[in-house]
Length: 202
Image (cartoon, rainbow, N blue to C red):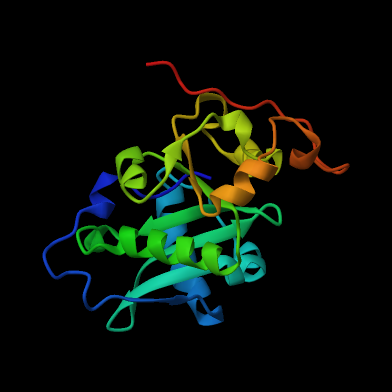
């Protein structure tokens, strides 16, 4: 769940975003996405991915390009008929003032809306940005337990310092069906019980 985005990925130079293209990822994007994600993974910032994992998940991904060059990627991963996670956000170091991060998040939120989801969530270090685009901070226990399965592989699992944020897309539906932590809508018979990590104390 670790994101490669920091605050500088959301800094935009005047006019920098006008030539950016956002589209759904295709199979030939796997190699550059892997290179991008695994370059962050080598520094302990993101989870490493394999070609097999990316091939399975490529339909979750969107990419931002400029003149045919891939500058960033992110995924919308479904956890229930009503919720999805925005994850695997990564932007090339040389593109961090071009508005790529904002383009990615806006595109993934729009995709969630097209699927008529009630809400999307993310784990992030850039809470201020997500607040500006309609997300708010939530307790980790309110999120689907399935969302924590990738966390078990994360080197920061026992000292996680990312913040959970949520954006409600359909307030009427969400207020009617909002699940309770550990409730029946949050789990399935195949779910594993895992310890939810707590934020690192600083």
